[in-house]
Image (cartoon, rainbow, N blue to C red; front, top):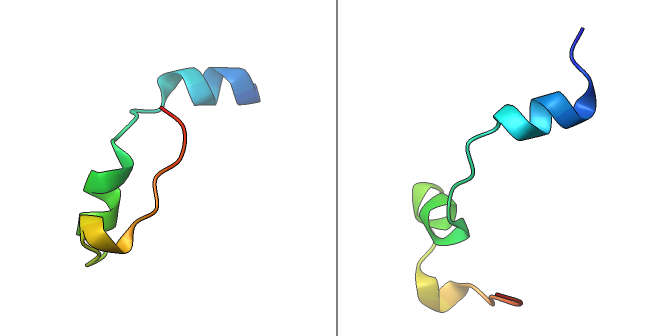
Length: 35
């Protein structure tokens, strides 16, 4: 069984804007914080 950190390290990170588009949101509907 994999440890949590091993699962997290194997995950492919995607930009939040790309994820938002995939569920039908536009960039104008997002409030981005941080980097």
